[in-house]
Amino acid sequence: MGYKAGVKRRPAIKTIKIGTRGSALALTQTNLVADMIRGKCPGANIEIHVIKTKGDIMQDVSLVRIGGKGVFVKEIEDALLKSEIDLAVHSMKDVPAEIPEGLQISGTPKREDPRDVLVSRNNCKLEKMARHARIGTGSLRRAIQVREILPDVEIVPIRGNLDTRIKKIEAAEYDGVIVAAAGIRRMGWMERVAQFLPTEVMLPAAGQGILAMEQRCDDQAVSEIVALLNHEDTWIEASAERAFLKRLGGGCQLPIAAFAKKTGNTITARGLLGSMDGKIIIREEIRGFAEDAGIIGTNLAEAILARGGQAVLEAFYRQCQ
Image (tube, rainbow, N blue to C red; front, side, top):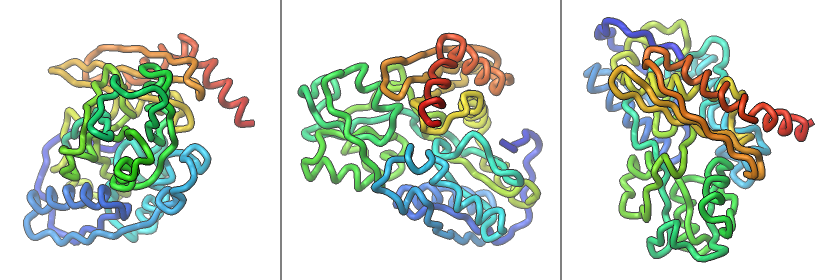
């Protein structure tokens, strides 16, 4: 993460090539960032470049099998490194903990709603779901937390764009799907939400609701533009959550969740690590000074590792050998 606090000066106007995935949500999010740039730099020439990623192409295969959430960003990062684009806009939760050498996340606009939501047939609430109801999600994190609440529901893997998932309900293939509230809000589909799931019930993915602006480390002109868009509190929360993720070495191969909330000068970070089958779920919470966000995220991971998380990780890696 490369943002540095300080005086934000208006940069010289330049053409900015922004890379993104081709889904409706990704394009909506990228256009939000483009509009922010135009607002701060009137007259800026913005070009949006759609780049197909491995995750977009292989939608019939689980993320775990094709390499985790990094499959949504690799091709875009390659384009950055080749100078084919100047800036990439990602959903932060799709960005692996390790960034390729020569690149950095340089800013985060203000966070959208970090919660998950249930979209269901007849707007049925989660606690009212019938036994053996079919709940669609491609997230191990969501799956194990739903099973904690409703052990009798059937969790069905689902991939695809946000609108594709919702259509599965309309076609009666699923009784409900769980998706990120941020995407629903950005797409203007609030009327489809049956229930918002509080973070105390469904801890979100690290970075959920946050947009990551990634660039080449040596591109000072883009750094100056992105600095104008950065939201300090969001940056601090993301720093804690990503430090937690980095310490666990996580993407989405294991159920991992993290959510940090800055209030005044303090930050509260909550984290979760589970086994693949959900039989083990370890939760922890740490509070501290917001200026120590990265340290707090790391300490949160250490606390979980000390309470049995290390054994969960070791068991998983043995299984992968």
